[in-house]
Image (cartoon, rainbow, N blue to C red; front, side, top):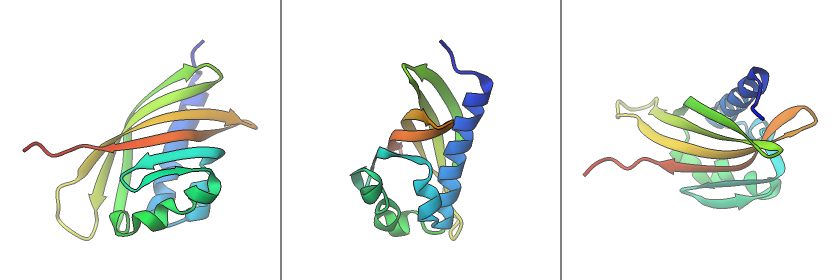
Length: 130
C-alpha cells in the first residue's frame, strides 16, 4: 500500500516544522514533532524519549545557533503501519559567508491521532572530499 499525497505533504511539513523550530530555538515546538518514544541520532549522540530529546537543541548549542536548516529531496514510502523518509538537509550559517554544509536524514514515522510524528531520526553530515 502506498501513502496518499495528503500523508506525504503532512510528512514534508513535519520536517519543515522540525527545522523551523530548531532554527528558532523553540524546544517545545521541536518536541511536538516527536512521538513520546522518539529517538534522535546525530553528532551529539543518541537521545531517546521526550525527556532526553529536550536536551538535543541545548547540547547542539553553537552547532545550530545562527543557522538555517533547509529540508529538500523528500523520498517518502509506506512502511508497515508507518512510513520511512529520506531527505536532504542544507545548513546555511547566516553569520558567516561559509559554504553550506549538507547532510541526509533517515527517518521512521508514525501517525498518531491523525498526526505524523518522528519515531526515529538519524542525521548523517556529509564529509567534504579530501
